[in-house]
Image (tube, rainbow, N blue to C red):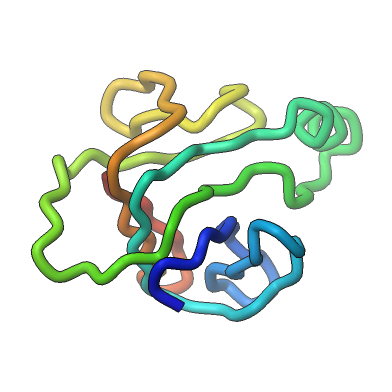
Length: 118
């Protein structure tokens, strides 16, 4: 699947990342480890509003990018997270700075907990 443009979100039921095809929007796989390039962090404001209103999570935030081989990729090693109750965008863990894009992102699941590093 290297070279395929996808959207990734954390699947709360399976405790892994779901991989959704960008064009068809169909889930094409699941993984605990994936590396993307030309990354865009997308949040649907209407989906976030529904979470705030209903106090129930739904899929409204995705990491979009092209699947790439992780060999030789240099990350700047900054953690990225998203919490719909605190922020309206993805943000850095350390400083809370909003982030909308990155050259690369490595998404991993450790002990059923998602981690995003750029």
